[in-house]
Image (cartoon, rainbow, N blue to C red; front, side, top):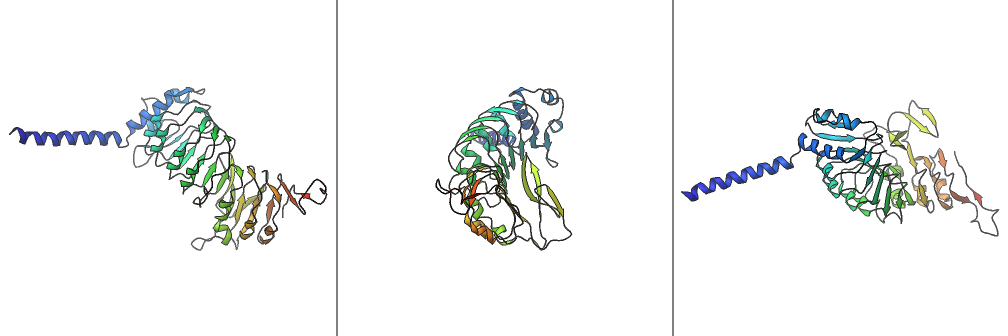
Length: 344
């Protein structure tokens, strides 16, 4: 009898234990509230008193400033505290926002290192830590954010080298690392799998592998019988081109068209700190309309293969150390013609 009664008791205890585990690990608004309050307590300076007043347990978390909850589930999916002049650190509890897809704390004064627990944010698609005071090395575990489409770490105090694990971010479209204390070269092979990368703000030698993977510009791009066109856009202070509408903006001029026969293809690597020479294989990207390498540290001869870009309408190589003609030397500098600006 005792043994018979013991088994149901064991099953009951296992069931209760399993239920507790599920209740802890399953996403819920109470867990999200605790995670956000931990962030609030790690903020030492809130000059506008927004979080001090608004982030209160008397209000629903989904009504807190900077918080967006999912329409189907009453769970936090976005946190945007950018441009609020906040000072503080990132607590490990922030990783409990398990359904978070958008995290933007850019343009503040957050500092310190980043907790490894953030790897639990498997659903992140947008991560902006730009223009803060974070230090230490860029963590290798950034490569765990496999859903990430935008990564912005610019204007911080990161040191060391760019981790090769960023090459695991197969869905990455925008990457910005400029104005840190990084050193070394771009890791070999980092761009092999980043076929969706559209925006790169970085420093180092020009990523030739990335250029080689621009298959759409090499052959032209047409999807489902409808041409897609490129216009100038801006996000996070970074200029880039995206697919939208029937207008095209280049060099501040907006052109309207009733119809176009070819897709507009643009490469804009301006205002980085790229080193090295312009790769000859750029001449294979014969659908290019705009090519902009201005304001970098490129050196060497302008490759004659650029003459194969028969569709090219705008070329800007200004503010580099490029030349045409014979290679300059101390005895014969007159034959070298420095390139300051080229536009077709």
